[in-house]
Length: 221
Image (cartoon, rainbow, N blue to C red; front, side, top):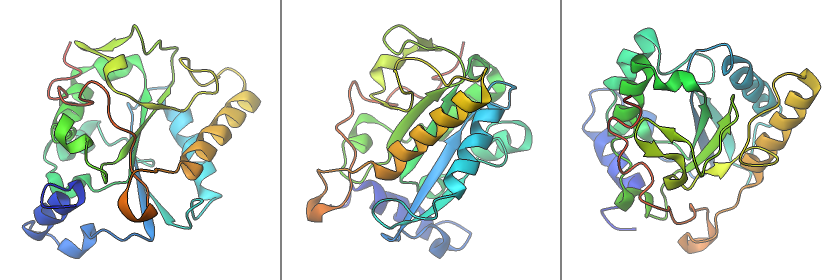
């Protein structure tokens, strides 16, 4: 894919990191899914539900072993927030990012961490065949054509939507319905097949509007 490949740039950053570069090496038999969410009462049950549902499936439909990151502890709050703001490119190696949207992400403690975490994902990066896929689920009702996070409209993201009837949100009020929504969302992730990567692998659909191109300070209100 050339020297501008997302994965090659991640590996190059890993090689210069102080920790073990092998920890970040890309393994085509594995699939890493990272969660992004605010530690608020609306999002926590959804993230826990995702974690429980994914645990049932050790592999995806392509027989890649699943590895979940940041589903146990909020990656954007408290000490985790400071760690997120200190992350380098070497820490961004993931095949999928799952964002659980809630109004709490407007808070500064989350906004700064999210903006820093995604500063790398410019239009050029996301146009690469091996760029990660970004999934959007919501703890609160959201219209992706109208809603903004900070000054940035959601419609510019080009998300893969996890709700059964997007735009919308997970049905939190009823545990059975929420369980059904999460099961369907996990099924979408596990069976998502990219079609534009050379060699028949997976690759992200072309991003629209320079997804995350303006994410430095994205959530600053």
